[in-house]
Image 1: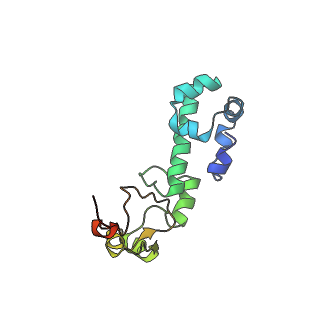
Image 2 (image 1 turned 45 degrees about the horizontal axis):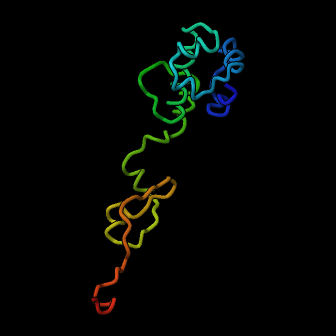
Amino acid sequence: MTDLSIVLPAFPTDQYRHLIPSLEKNLVTTADLLTLDAVEIAKRAHLPVLDVKRLCTAVLRALQDDLGLGGNGDAPNEASAKATDRKPQLRKSGNDLVEQWSAISTLDGKIDAALGGGIPTGYITEITGERYALNPPHPSALGPQD
């Protein structure tokens, strides 16, 4: 749980301060709160299941708000209020995306057109497929064959 302050610095830990020491002692991380079942975490840390479930839900909502994915009609909390002050990072209009689009050309017009201008910058991009030579030798250029 020591990584909670790194992952979500604005998360209100005051209401969960009675849970945090036990979670830290049993090496429960923020990723565990998001991925594991609350019952498993409660057993591992010897805590009440409902309290752990509330903490898991609060961490998930705070992370969604931080990423701009909130807005499901729930009562706003401090973290969601901060998220609405700035423009959500993942919710952008098409015009916003076009204005921010930055790409590196592949120097192949067809591939650039298919990718919308080239390989987008700011993302991890993996290119897979068959390997081919740009100018494979022609059989006549190799000389006479037996």
